[in-house]
Structures are given as C-alpha cells and as structure tokens.
Length: 294
Image (cartoon, rainbow, N blue to C red; front, side, top):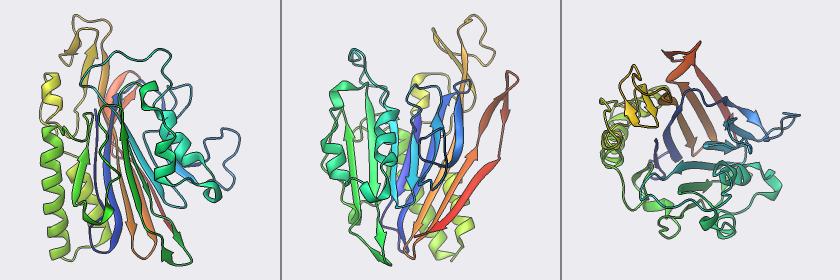
C-alpha cells in the first residue's frame, strides 16, 4: 500500500504533495538524493528521489526534477487481473518521465500518450509539470494514467485536495476520502493561524500518520500509515509471524512532503518511518531535506 495527497489550489503554492511509501522492509532501496538514474556520475544531476534497488530498472515511486516535473506511482491491488506476460517494471514509467534532461523534458500529455498501459501490472501514474522560466510560470500540467481506469487530464485550477492509493482513482479507499477532508481542514487552519513553512511540513507529515491496527486487507484501506506487520504466503499474520516461514516485515517506510511555492522556492522532505536493522524492526525519524529555487 502507498498513498498520496496533493493540491494545486492552495494560495501561495503551485503544488503541495504528501505521500507515504509502504513496502517490505527487506526490499533494498536508496534514500532520496540528487542523481540522473546513472550509477556512474551525479554531476549536474536534475532528479531528486529514492530508488527501488530491488527492481532491475532501479526505478522510483516518487520524485521531482530541477525543472519541476513531479510524479508518483502506486500499484493497484484490486480488481485483481491476470498479469500480462513478461510485464516490465512499473517503476520504469516514472523513471523515464523524470530521467529526461530538462532541455528534452516531455509534456505530461505527450508522455502519457506514448505509454501502452496493457503491458504492465496494475498501476496509477500521477504526473505534474510546473516549469518556470525567467521568473514566469508556464501553464501547469497534471495528468493521470492507469490500466484500470483513465479519467481525462486533470485540471489543476480546481482540483481541491485530492488523494490516491492502491485502487483506481475513481474508486478511492476510505483512507483517501477521509484524508482529503483532513488535508483541506489542516490547510485552512494553517492559513488561519498564519503559520510558517516548517509548520506546514509537520502538518502534512501528521496527515500521513494515522495508523489504526491492521488485521486484514480491508483494514489496510483505512490505515494511512501501516504499522509493522508480517505478510507471507498465507497473507497477513500476527506480529510474530508464527506459522508462516515465508512471512516478511511490511510497513510504511518513508513519508515525503513536497512544497512548490509561487515564488519558485521548493522544499523536499523525506522522513524515515520504519526500518529493518539486523533483522529487527526499528522506528525511525531521520530525514533528508532539500531546498532549492527556480
């Protein structure tokens, strides 16, 4: 499970985005850093994201570029469909969008039009292009593609607070619906209290924090943050994993907040939630923070 909340209608901001990544704790991944998806050099890097090192493509689930392309990818769990033969990694989709050099960056519409969704296992792909040149913002683009449902290109000016998880965008989980309401309420309160940007980051981290107990797949549709649990061949198991030797630890691993201000200042914060250390689950609160301007 993963989840993202976002808005492009908050005064003073082109985009506010908050996301959790839920994954098996033993799946290798890199922390967010500047790179070009090139393992040999980070010189003149324009991509800021973590990487899924458990995939041959070493793609990503969420990222931003120095020219303000932003994207997030989630898988779709239901409805269950037979996977296509030799399906490529879904992480490659977002990797390809972000990896293009700024002077060759595709529009959201053109990029999505070239994808054949039927080749992939179920996915949601949400993309933004917020390019700013010489102090002037281009018309923002936002687009969504899935192989389960495909609404038209999103309209940034009136999207309100929206969310997406591991179901089609048109069939939101309960945690998405409640989170959209909580995001709107939190932003209204933040503006009313005239709080600063550090407080905004913490509010968005709080938005990602509700973690009710999970004992079934249905429970996961209500939990914004997934507390550590064991998942194996027999499905969800007790914390001890007793009776299922295949069980692996699963949880929310990192939370990410991206703020893109009208004045061109960008704040990116990736905060650890849960890690596996020497085979033991540990709660973490370390973070990577990048601030830059365009």
